[in-house]
Image (cartoon, rainbow, N blue to C red; front, side, top):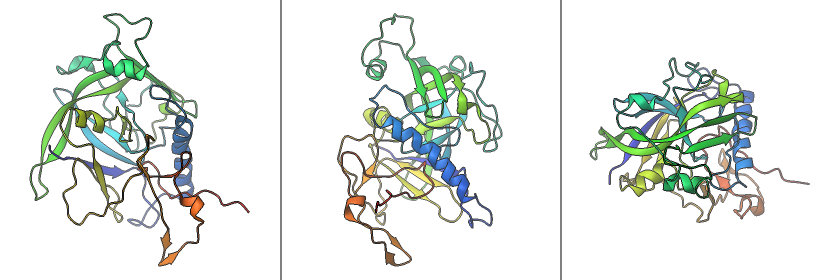
Amino acid sequence: MANGVLEVQPKFTIVGVGGKGSDIGVLQNHDRNHHRRHLVAADLPLGGMDTGDLAGSGIYYTEIGIGAPTMQYYVQVDTGSSSFWVNGISCKQCPHESSVVSKLTLYDPLESITSRAVQCDDVFCTSKHWGVQPDCNRSSKCPYYFAYGDGGATVGWFYKDLVHYDQLSGNNGQTQPTNASVIFGSAAQISGSLNISEWAVNEIIGLSNSNDTVLSQLAAAGKTKKIFSRCLDSRKGGGIFAIGEVVEPKVKTTPLVNNKSKYHLVNLKSINVSNTTLQIPDNILETTNTKGTMIDSGTTLVYLLLIGN
């Protein structure tokens, strides 16, 4: 099994990094929108609605290739989400450009010889919709509908196509291109906040703990292990997401909480700022069935529960 590598770039820069950065209010507003998706979606089953504001969500984005011939797409890398979808060619409202990326590609299944529509009776589709839909027939494609907490929504269809990415080819950090067949959504229509083009990319690739993420699909196909790591540049921003087994001996790890949550949770023991340990009650940091410390690449700042008087 090989390791995949995604080079990521930041959508925002922190004040003081590189001489220019984003105002703290901008970052807080971004996080509020991003968290609205998680908070509402936490009580919904697989196949239900995701929630949040994707127009301002996602702090890191990466470039991937889809189809044959390969077309390039810029997608947000979000460890707090399971969705993988891009804007489709039939989407009239989808942005064509933004301040992040000069040109946004729209997915056209007819232009890719490896594209295949996921049918409504496919196992992937029935697991998403809790069974075969009543109006399903041999010519019916598998639909998706994601609604977001701020009123934004996207409707489209699931397709299976080749996704191209880099994999490590040796111990010296060199990479070579590879690909694998992956199921993802192609938006036919978007509304609300998703129409905003200011911070738009081609939407999102989720790496949460769900069974339908790209990583889960690659692992099920035997392409890589269901493991990922991230190395982020604290000076210039950006970095890499490594998919698969981590072989670097100096990497520090912490175990994830073994529960049924679709989020990546850890047991936070303490917080140290400038060599001073913050006095935080244990019950604030402990992980339970209703709360925990989530590792989320789509959040810019660190947030703690408010301690009552």
